[in-house]
Structures are given as C-alpha cells and as structure tokens.
Length: 219
Image (cartoon, rainbow, N blue to C red):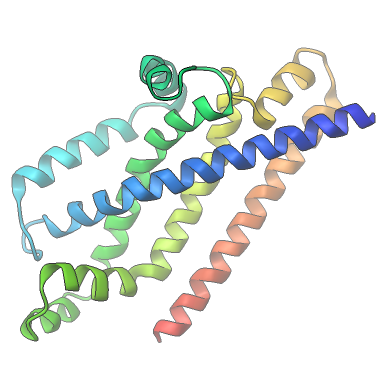
C-alpha cells in the first residue's frame, strides 16, 4: 500500500473518530435526561405522569424504528439548517446524534429500572427530593450498567458512521466506497474493515473495564 493510501486511511480514521466522539457526546447529553424522564414519569415511580411518558415514549419509538439511511436523507433540510451543509463529517453528526439519542434514552431507562425499588423507597422515607433521588441514588446505582449501554451505542455509531460515508459523510465508509469498491481496491476494503473491527474491539473492552470498575466500587 502506497504512502498516499496510508495517509488517506489515517485521515479517514480521524474523521470517523471525530464523527463517533461528537455524536456520542451529543447523544448522551440528549438521551440521559430523556431516559431519566421516561423512567421517573412511569406509573408507580417518583414523578408519575402518563401524558409526558406516553408522548416521549412515542417520539423515541418512532425515531428508533426509522432506518439510519432513510433518517439521514429525510432530515437533510434540518442538517443544512444546523451546520450549513448536508455533506461532510460535521454534517453527518446531526443524523448520527438524532439516531443515537433515542437508543441512549432507552438504555438509560432500562438501567434505571433495574434498581431495587426498596432503595428508592428508603430514600423517600428519609425525605430525599425527586432530584436528590435521581442524582444521588438512581444514576450512581445504575452507572455501571449505563456505561455498558453507552458502549453499545458507540459501537452502533461506528457502524452508522460507515453507512454515512456512502452518502458523503466522509470517514472510513466513504474511503471504502470511493477507493475500495469503485476502484476495485481490495486492499483498501480489507484495511477499512480491519480498522473498524479493531475500533469495536477497543471500545467494547474499554467499556467492559470501566463498567467492572464502577461495579466493584459500588459493591
């Protein structure tokens, strides 16, 4: 493989890391409060509200059920409005975030619902406010599970970022399409696949390690 191709691989790898890191951060910033609201507004929880829970649940389910490629095309006007373009790595962050945020929200909700209701009841009996229960009981207790869930979200985003490359999003997916597929460069195809697999392995291993550390600390 020529030095030019190696430089292209490194550039595309950097673009993929940028897309995944930025969209993960934004998805967590949106998905975390959304997941908390979905949890606490459930019937029998600390702030039950059927209307809010139903509306947010419907929005989350609708977004999650839309295939990423369709979502990316459908929100092109929104992407242009936000970043001024529908092509490029920065533009790809918008659909990646919109796709990942509902997934993160459901992950947060699932993790919080695993907490023993007795722990919540004990906090309420000691006079803790709903916000104190959320910040000092729910989130700390579920953090190791949340880390594993966010790890899954990051892995999904790595795959989505490769699909984004097919629509001008840049990154390893774009490199694989333009050079590997269209120019019949099997070495480029293999290199991009190997790099993507390595990314997934590293992210999963790191997520498992952090989750295990948090779980031991809690115990």
